[in-house]
Image (cartoon, rainbow, N blue to C red; front, side):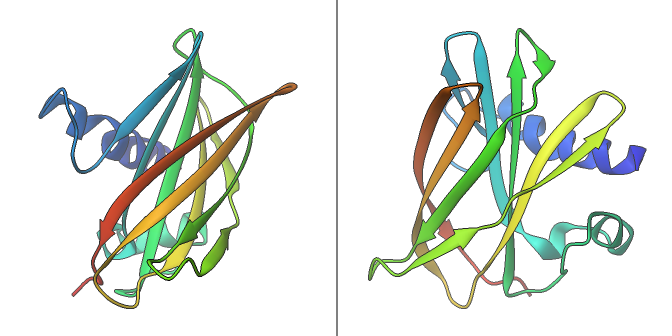
Amino acid sequence: MGRLALFLLTACLSVTAMAADVIKGERQEKFGDVTVHYNTFNSTFLTPDIAKATELTRSKNQGVINISVLKDGKPQMAQVSGTIKDLTSQSVKLNFRQITEQNAIYYIAQYPVDQQETRTFEIQVQIGDKINTINFNQELFPGR
């Protein structure tokens, strides 16, 4: 499972180094002393071992969204939920699962990617009584 943490952490943080204003890859939102990192990618980027370990389906028509919550730089448990909408406002519920490792907590969910299109994500992150909402658009592509 250590490789999973390394992969997900790399997926979350590597793109940040490329540009301050991230267009693709990892993004983040700050809510006081809480920072929520999020990214989405096609599940074909997962190795078969990591897909198996996380119980994710590796398919060109499946996307993955990865959320991590940090408070004062340390992993924070949260309740994460959300939806993804297409251009016709058809909505799909995202079913997040928590993955906990030695020094990391991640929330992952899968969603269908049937064709190239821009989708709107709405993610709620609840810590204690406080609910923070993140909205973003992402152009998605089926894998190869």
